[in-house]
Image (cartoon, rainbow, N blue to C red; front, side, top):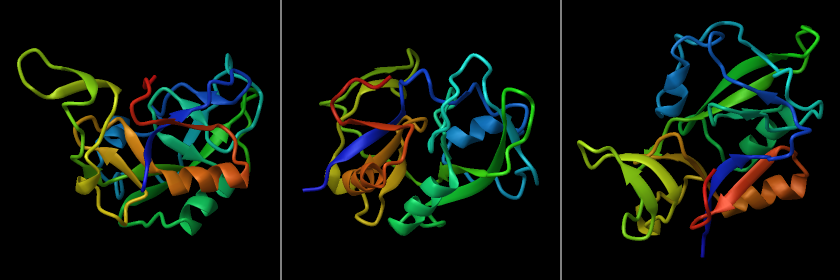
Length: 192
């Protein structure tokens, strides 16, 4: 049986962190909407490592926008594990260190552009907007497995697009490869 997790970032305070992608990326809020940013994506994006963050270089950079910001090693692993460009958009980004230097190794924003309506409202813990039944925030997620296309290993939850869902075989591959900065919480656990 296939299991799924919600993508999170490490809680290790020693790890690199970025506070956000704005102003480097116009309309950066679209990174949480399951839409492609190209061709409007800038030709060169430089994101600043937060001065108050840690000094440990990691493969998945923690950030306030809940995006996947992956090192070359991480991006290569994702590609080898079945992540397809029809399902995600890969957007290049460089990092500026705390001393103001742009680092040579590019990172990649992995932007899932497929959203799947699979939330089990009976079993999930969530809140809705007061004037509608739209999901505002999910605290514990349960899904209906039969609604998830078998080919998808990484996608956005249609009911709350800021949440990225990942299949267990990809989580295991990330663990086996020893990639750092990544954390995924099992369905039903509290989402931070």
